[in-house]
Structure formats: structure tokens, C-alpha cells
Image 1: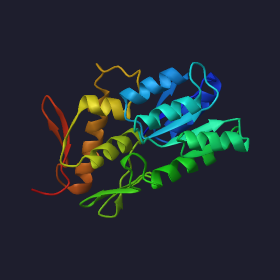
Image 2: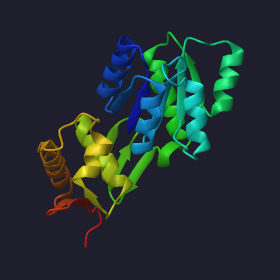
Image 3: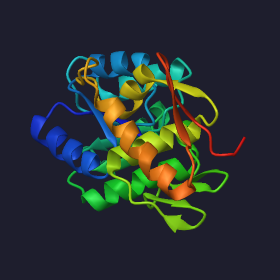
Image 4: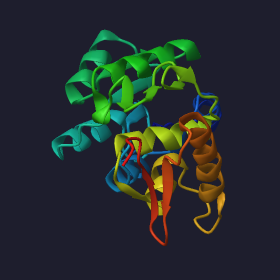
Length: 225
């Protein structure tokens, strides 16, 4: 999943970013409300973690604007303003949940998982195609019940392929969904990680599963034939 963290405190933003990356999420940071709305217009995020007290536009304004435009991305507000009236205002502005600072990181992860289970951004808890099953909450993957040992980046790639089975996925799409805003598009790292994932899937299935479409991207074909 790709998460937008909207936080003007660099220390807090760095702490959240590092923790989420260690859990296998792709993360972008927006330091103010204007940058947040711009990023949300350009990229299709799975969840937005939104501070309330921000430069240029506050979190209430950001949430209201995104909801007025019809954007349904789940929003989790993170703020030290935990008075009842602020919580009510945030939820009325369009937030799906509210977490007061300071918070335990495990609670943040649990709330993210809860938003996913409620159906945010096309999410199912388990993605399945043929013999392949990927549990997005437990970060596990199995082929015919046998566990596959995937790195966090391989897991993210396979998650995206399973959201688009039998479809050609372009390299640029993978860069957008699995890597962050500052990634060098000229790098061959996408091909390296896809190659590693391909070998693991082929070893489990006993046949090619993830194929290259020359000059375009990749396609996941779980079913034989």
C-alpha cells in the first residue's frame, strides 16, 4: 500500500515514515496542506495520515476539499488536539478515524489495518488468484498452502500484481505505487525486484507465472494456459 503522511514536524514525519517503511509500506511525505492536496490529486493513495495543525491549509480544510471532490481515500487524522469538539470537527470534515498524539506506533498500525478492513481503496484482506494467496494484514504469502519468503518490496509488487491479475502492469505504474516520489525513474531497480519475485514464484509453481511484456511491463498469469 502507498500512504501519504501529512506532517510539518520533520521529526514526527521521519519517525512515522521509518516505521511504515519497515512494515513494507510505500510512503510519501507532505509538509503542509497545499502539498498534501497536490499529492492527493496526482497519486492514488491507499490511506492518508493527516495532521490537523499545518501551514498553508489545516487538516480540516484538506479533508473537506478532498471529500468535496469525491475522493474516497481513507483519512486518519493525527493530532495533539484531542478535545471532543476537534474530534467531531475532523470526522465531520471527512476523516474516517482520529488518533491523538502522542501515540504508540502499534496502535497506528492497528488503525491502518482497521481502515483497510473497512474497504478503503479497493482493499480486501486476502488477495487470491488460483493457488496464490496473499494476506495483506499478516504480510504472508502462500502458493498451494506453502509459505513464500518475500522481502517487503517483493510483497508490495505481488500485492499490486494481484490487484491487476492478467493485466499488463507498466514499469511507471509500479514506480508510482511501490516506490516513493523521489525515486529515480532511470534506475533498473524495478526489473531487479521483479526478477527476484519471478524466480520465487516460478520455484513455487514449477512454471513461469510472472512474465515480461517487452517494452511495456509485466503480467501475472497464475492460471495455466
